[in-house]
Image (cartoon, rainbow, N blue to C red):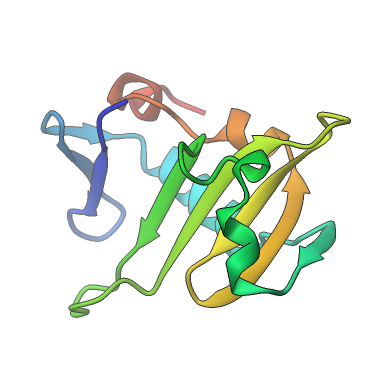
Length: 124
């Protein structure tokens, strides 16, 4: 999938600027941001930085990668990478650029993240 870039376009307005330019439902964007802000891990799989290289976690070909930027930053605030599902399929592997290691979180996070601009445009 090609990267999708969302940008705040004023108070209460959001738009996708890549791969197409279009305004999107601000409630859907806020919902995703709230969900990411409240992201909690279910389990610490490893706190070793090298652990993220293991193929079974799926970070080489992630299910999703979310880069969070502030308005004035030259570097991202954080990068959240979602990998493969765990064996029981209830959780997915997660890594954060700001923190070493591998964690798990609820697998339904992937279902909540829109994959296309059209999905972001749909009203909640």
